[in-house]
Amino acid sequence: GDYFSNSSIAHERLVRHSEGYTGDQLVLDDVYWGLWGSLEQALLEGTSPLENPLFYADPRNTERLITALHRDALAIAPRVVQLTPLDNPKSLLDLGGGAGTYAMAFCDRYPELKATIFDLPTTTKVTRRIVRTTGAAGRITVVDGNFLTDALVGEYDAVVMSNVLHGQQEKQNIDLFRKVIDATAPGGTLVIRDVLMNETLVAPAWGAVFAVNMLLHTGIGRCYSVQEVSTWLAGAGFTGIREVQRNELLIARKPEP
Image 1 (cartoon, one colour):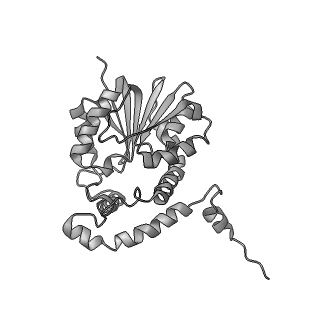
Image 2: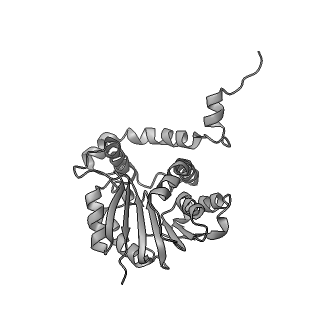
Image 3: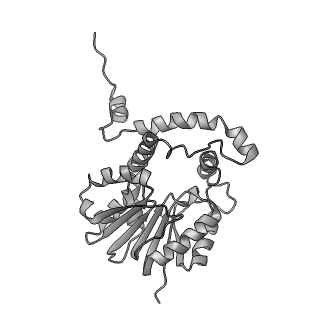
């Protein structure tokens, strides 16, 4: 007749307050489209076509990115918590934590845990809003900072780094792990979730494509192999390095004195 209405899938995926909303990711995909048009230039020159970071120069894109990653992580974080059991932790640092989805998931699992989310000020504006919606808000602190240049204050029973490594160069990650071990309590656990490659750096295929994506976005980032990351961890002083989930999840420990 004279009326238009959403189909069931449009209602589920495109209405912002629906449980399955993916509209933010679709908008980001539209932004990606133009960037991938510069693929030839990026591959020939080995540099990003961007002068400024795509997502942090525009607050609207920052919010879309953090919100989209949060929705994805809501399904992933509980599994990560299950695969990385901690020994009665009291403090946790979610480093480069974005929306803080992993901090929230660990707080749900460990009622005595207090968590700190550390990320850039452009991100934490969104983080604070999301944290206020969780039942663990009273146990979560959000701290503004740049982990590449700022000190990590405090000592934590556990540190979580999700999707952090692929945004930096090798030396930056090596230096970051040296900071992280100083911020980890003796006997504490480091949990790393990332797109981790096989030694050839061409498998898994998804990771190889994502590495090209990081070239387009950053000009410096890429996906690193399990072997590379394990070497950096050992060099920083971590032990018990173990791949818990293939090409995705590593844990390591800081030795007791």
